[in-house]
Image (cartoon, rainbow over all chains, first blue to last red; front, side, top):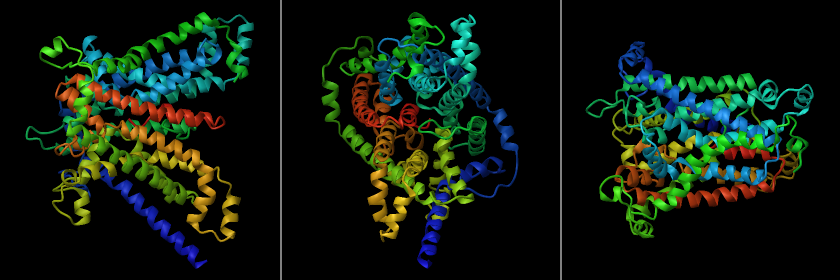
Length: 272
Length: 311
C-alpha cells in the first residue's frame, strides 16, 4: 500500500514536471504583451495596455490580419463548397472508379506536402501570375486541403440516412433543392469542422504564404510576425508579443467554439 | 462494401450530375497538387534556375542533379540531420512522451489531468510562427527564460545546440497527437487483463510488454508512421533557426528551400523534392496497408491521415 502511494506520488511529480515544460514557453505570451517594458525574459508585467495601441500604429500589423482573414476565409469557403459537392456525389452515386479515386486522394494528401512541392508550386504561381496575390495563396492551399476535406465529408454523408432525400424526391424536389434544404442542414457539423480546420490551417500556415507573397502589403499575420524587427535586426518585443497574443486568440476561440457547439473530440490530425 | 447508402442515389443525382459535382474539386487538385508533383520529376532533370541564362532556356541534364546532391556534403549532412530530427523528436520524443502521458493520466481525473491535456493541446493548436517566437524568447542567449531558470547566463542554445533545440521544440509542438491517439488506444485494453496480470505479480514493465503492447501494436505503428511523415515534412524549424548556424539544423525541407528559392537552383531543388516525394510515398503506402487490415477503426484513422500535422 505504501509502495502504491509512493508510486502515485512519483508519477504526480513527473506529470507536474511535464506540465511545467509545456507551460513554460507560453508564460511569455501571457505576460509580455501587458508589460510596460517587455523584455525577452518572462516576468511579472508592469501592467499596461499601451502595446496594443502600438500595434495600431504599425503599418502592416492590422493589414496583415485582414490579409489572413481574406486568405483563410477564401480558402475555407472554396474548400467547403467544392468538397461538399464532391463528397455528396461520391457518397450517393457510384461514379466509375470511385474507390480507386478515394484511395488516390488519401495517398496524395499525405504524399504531396508543401515541402515536396514548393519548387513547382512557386514556378506554377509565377507563370500563372499568382505571385503576390491573395488568389494564389487561396488556390494553392485549397488544392492541398481538398483531398482530406472530401474524405472527411464523404464519411459524414455516408452516415446520413437517405430516407429524407427519398421522401423529398417523391414530392418532386430537384437534386439541387434536396442538397440545399435537406443534406446541407444534416451535415452542418461536418461542414463547420472543415471550415474551421481550413481556416485554422491557413491562419497558422507559413511556407506557402512565405514563398508566394513578396509584398508585405499582402502578407498574412503569420508571415508579418516574422518581420517585426528593427532596422538593427533586434526583435520589437512589444509588437511581437502583443501581436502573437492577438493572432493566437481567434484560433483558440474557434477550437473552443467548435468543440462546445458540436461536441467534437480531437480526432487524429484534425484539431477539433 | 455495398453499404445501402452508397449505391442508393437517393436524390436522383445520376452519374452525369455526380461527375459535374466532383469535377471542380478534382480540377483544383489536379492543377495545384498532382501537376506540381509530376512537374517536380521533370524539373529535377533540368538545370533550371531562378535567374540567368538557364532561367530562360533550361537544358535537360539527366541525373546530374542527383549525382550532384549525392556528392554535396551539405546534402548528406542535411539527410543525416533529418534522420536524427525525425528519430529524436517524433519516434522517441513525441511517441515516447505521448505514450507516457496517456499511460500515467489514464487512471486520473480532475484538474491535473485537465491542465496537462489543456497545455499539450494548446501547444499543438497555436500558429507555428507564434510558437517559433515563444521558443526563441525561451532560448535566447542573453535574456532567455530558460537561462534565467537554469542559472546558465549566456548559453546560446540555438547557436550551440541547434539540432537539440529544434528536436525539443518539435516534441513540445507535436506530442498532443500521440497523447490523444494512445489515450484512445489504451481505452481498448481490457482493465480485467491488466488486473489479472497485476494479481499474478507482473510489475509495470511486464504489464506493458505482455498485456498493453500486444493490444495496441497497430496503434503504435500507425502513430509512428504518421508522426514520422509529418515531422519529415515539417518546415517550422526554419522559423526558429533558419537552418543555421552553418547548416547545423538544416533539415531537408529547409535545404530544399535554400537551394531552390534562395540560391535559385530550381532544378537541383526539384531533384531533392522528388526524393522527399518518394520517401513520403513509402511511408504513406505502408500506412494505408496497415489501415486495410482494420476496417472497424477506419473512420478515425483515415481522418488522421487526411488531416495532417498542425499548421
